[in-house]
Amino acid sequence: MSTTFGIPQRMIDIDKICDEDGELLDYINHDFFERIWFRSHYGRWLNPLASRLPDDTRVFPLDNSAQGIYTIGDIKEFMDRIDKEKSNEKV
Image 1 (cartoon, rainbow, N blue to C red):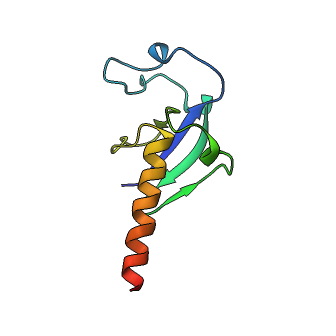
Image 2: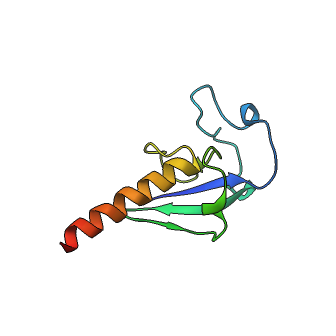
Image 3: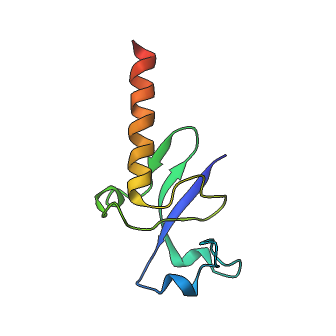
């Protein structure tokens, strides 16, 4: 399942945009978020600077479920795992 992830365009109290489970409230406009990463079978950065953000930067799924991706660090781990799987296929 493909998902686009984003970060808020400006500082905000997370409790104002998320429910008690950490999911975005349904009335939050997704235009408020900078799209930074797209996940499908593989992942790709949508913003070239996003990979330089601190690993603990929170990311939000904008069009599907998080599927275990909650921070920039999670994205980097996913990308590393995919790269290792690709390199093992070539051997």
